Length: 98
Image (cartoon, rainbow, N blue to C red; front, side, top):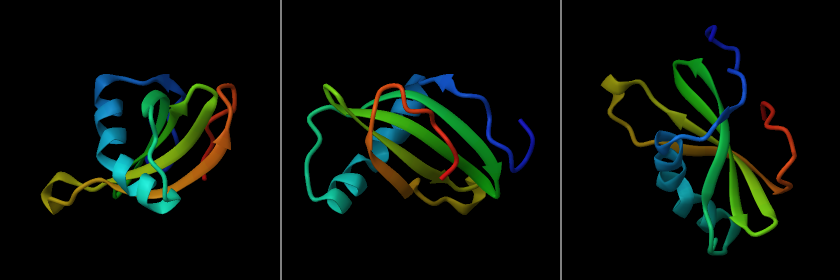
């Protein structure tokens, strides 16, 4: 993956799920609702001064959100942060930069 460009879409891993779980409460607060399901399905990543993750998350049987999470460089010692999200997505909606 080149710096600045996004990777190809990949199936979510345990690490991807852990990253999504860390920002679940941030998304619930912004949307003012609780999600009964929060399952990462696939992701792209982007190297910047840290790493952006674009993650497709299933939040209900037929409801999906795309989240962008920023992970800072290790020496900065900062928690991951939800930086953007898109609601009303479907299972087959492509993950794109947003």
